[in-house]
Image (cartoon, rainbow, N blue to C red):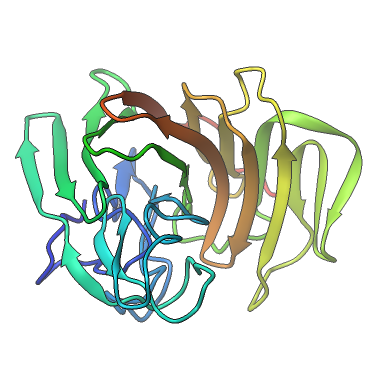
Length: 291
């Protein structure tokens, strides 16, 4: 697991939460996760690995009211300076005004990251993330706690990008992605993939192509915050399930990662707290099965 560090950290970009980036999980001789890019740049917006999270992908706290050069807040990152552009870009380049400070507490089967940040114009929060192994299971849980310590209401999204690759097998026909909801009729995802029933299949290697598709948006009955990424070549899978209802699920993929992305809403009036968690299971229980 990569630890957050403003001087030496693996990831020092301005998009993703610096805490809880997992370089790899090893389970029964198989490897899960891996870097998204072969050549690493710690300041590149997506130079991450594993279950990487982003807060406020579209409307960061304080961005709309800040003047060019003034700061706005990115949870899990710190204070960033607004540029001349009136619209926030999640992949934009923003000057770091002040990175958030982290306290890291290690336990025998867990690690907890805590960040308290006080920004300008009434924005402030206390954020805590714990990654905890399940005893006796090939699983871990990510627990979140976000408290609004400021005077402004926090109304943002959180999602996990879930950069998933298994045994370093490129994402393509060897994989299937299983979702907790289904489509009535097959939906082509570009020219190389198909969302059919509750599964996404790819017809050929992606090579240098990318997929992006909103596979669900609407009212979650309470069971849609979940997915399985299955490697049929090696008989392995990563399955996750969260306890917060989602507002949408986006599927993004390149050769180095398959990414089911569940979005949740975070709405906190001053003094209020929101907690949520997601459990990840690592499955090695099937014989290799070529599609």
